[in-house]
Image (cartoon, rainbow, N blue to C red; front, top):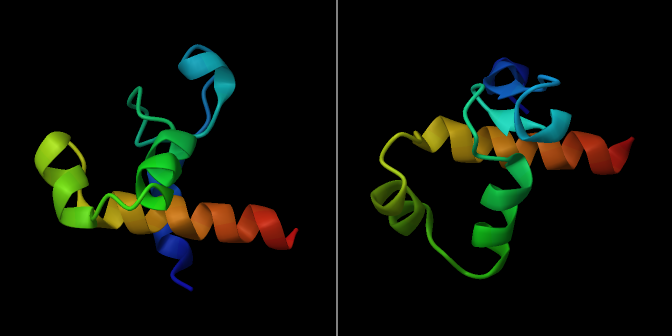
Length: 70
């Protein structure tokens, strides 16, 4: 686990209703996870959302893992 990646996840009251987002943008962690779980590859996500970086996607997965474990 790379806890440095978790710094890419931000929670701000005025952004997406305070839900976890990628680097303060209006791309929620849950949006990224839904894309991944539906079978969208990292390459496809990065092509469709050029403002995202590979580390952002890994951070979303890592964040979900940390939340699930508790």
